[in-house]
Length: 328
Image 1 (tube, one colour):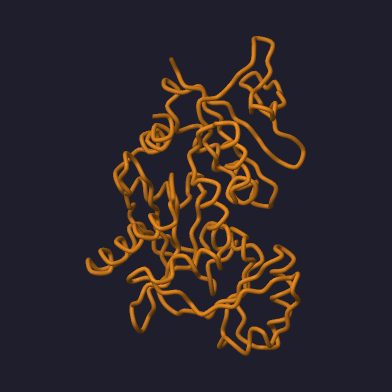
Image 2 (image 1 turned 120 degrees about the vertical axis):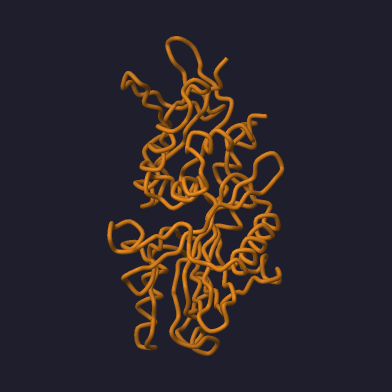
């Protein structure tokens, strides 16, 4: 008998459009001979399912079921593809834990921690071969001044919403006079902001996933952007950046990076597929970790699908392996 899968997309942030694109790729790739897939959207309007006959059904949140004329539909597992809240910050995971629904991402605690860039770096700090850029964490509730940054960090710096994604609200600041405006932009997106010292070097990102108790590392992707940094435009506008998969690393770099990435995945108790962004510093070749993404993009041209194809896998087999891991 085919398993019933809830493919959950949408979200409460500007990343919802990216989420819907990711969900389309997953839907097309999943094996319809093995799974009955129900496309579910969660947003500020409602929790709903649009069936193949274009009929709209409202989700019963008591048990995450769909009341239909033919009977109530319940699910064997949820494939979460929401970027940002509530699908990447642990809120949806906590709900699914309470009703006993298996899901494909990290658990609630890991999702909440990794959504917070500053807390994530505190936890992975000290892992061999992992370096962390100097940073300052600011809280809107505690007040802040420009000097809170300038007294501790050396320009240039990156100013980021602490829990944001897709580089929304992110700025590179070279002059002290531009810092106040950059902080305002970031605080417009989040109540916490992290300011990090700039690390010059080659930028990469790498996917990892766990199947049958083993952590697998996908081929890395090297990011070469025509802009000063990999911002929202560079990520989602064709031709603004070049993504080279596999990225150009020596055998020594590859072994060092992959070993450290597995340790990061394990220390954070990750599950499912995650993507970790890092820089190999120009002068020292040290690896600086930027952030951990627990619900990485899955649209056709997104980085994880590129890496899966470079590893010689089909997207059908890859997504199937992620589902079978939680259905077992």
